[in-house]
Image 1 (cartoon, rainbow, N blue to C red):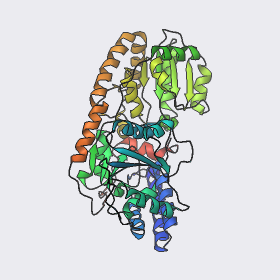
Image 2 (tube, rainbow, N blue to C red):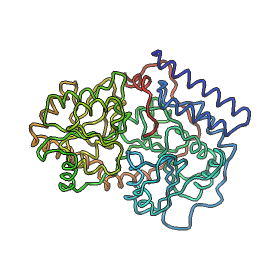
Image 3 (tube, rainbow, N blue to C red):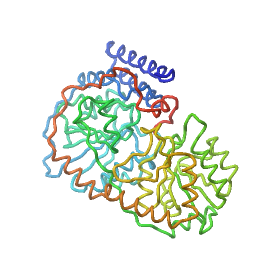
Image 4 (cartoon, helix red, strand yellow):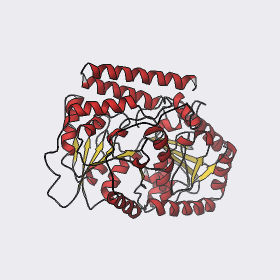
Amino acid sequence: MTTQLATNRAKLVDFERQAVDAFERGDDDLTLARIEEGAIWSWGHHPGRFASSTFEQLLRAVGTRHAVTRTNTGTSSTTLRVLHVLTEAYATGGHTRLTWRWLEHDRTREHTVVITEQIHDPVPDALARAAHGRVFHLDGESRVDRLRNLADMMMGFDLVVLNIHPHDAVVAAACAASTDRPRTFLVNHADHVFWIGASAADQIVELRPSAISITQERRVSSPSVSVLLPLPLDEPSADPVRGQSLRTSLGIPDNAPVSLCLADAYKFTDTSGGRFVGLLRHALTRHTELHHIAIGPNSETPQWRELAHDFPERLHVLGRTPAYHASFDAATFFLDSYPFSSITAALEAACWGLPVLTLGDRGVTPLGFDDAGLVPRRAGSDDEWIATIREWSTHPEIARREGETMRLDTLSFHRPAKWMSRWEALLRTPWQRPRDFTIPEETSFQPMDAGIELLGRTRLEMFR
């Protein structure tokens, strides 16, 4: 184990000790607080472990202390009611988009959303519309109050879908508090990092193939807990006028090649000083007609600020904006973020017919691109990445041809009808509530690859 990973793990162990001490003193609210603090720390400073047996056992124990008994058998309606639980909802990012698309496409059931701690932004309009206004905020002055309220609320539904942040101890404990709760799914949208709550779910919904192996080898001992679902991605209607309008507003010539990246700022952060930004600098230097649109990062970040200073007319850093679809219409091709892939954004770009380029560094596999449908152009080196940009910039017909192939491949797996059929099949599958929760024993520390060590050395920005 590297020194940094050992340091991170020691900090996690200290949080575990504090949580145990609080529980033994009977302070359940403090126990949940210590678990949350430890999970937040380990989310941002990978400890080489993906789960904590101590935290999961404490979550179950706290929940059991506040157990809620079902007083009804669901609803009298023939329409199944589904409760979606989020920690916080955002206008950008794949995490919240997945929930509102889930609601939009599963029209045979009635969906309700409950949010446990909406702190930063207002609830996105798209989520409220998809839920037909059934979006609620979890009440309660303390964590234990919210735990009880959520446990009681779940009893009025037929299915529960958890799409929560990696640190949400209230939700995990609430599931433990309602042992006869409805069938519960947990969406694993952060499969490459540490998170809590695996013990709260009957089944874990995986969004990419490699997530299954991480879950089964490093997170949960039961091999039957993981299920793979596509993302319900719509086939968009290209709007050339909208794309042209964006180009005009940014001062981009009609025929200029445009590359696009769309990801949260932290996904471009690594310990080498910013490999993605450095490569983009080379691309802009070598290809003087190339423009680049960056959505997610902002020009206040030092690396992006310096790049914007050097290429003020050809680098367009737009920050976080919900009105990002015009950028797909304006772009020629899409650049996946590095070292942390932005899979949802890449899939959306492919649905628009944009070819996707990712830096396929074998050393950061858990962080890189992995999907059951889309096969991007995978550059094995910096030179190959630059060469692909040159090829697509100078031969847009090649970019269009590859983009069309990627569009068809992506939609073949992620088309809403395909997602719906798999979701229906999953609900028909027999299941059993796990009686015990165990984490695979770690006999020796063998990182999957350098990606885990990179996570251990990189302080991640919180949940954006």
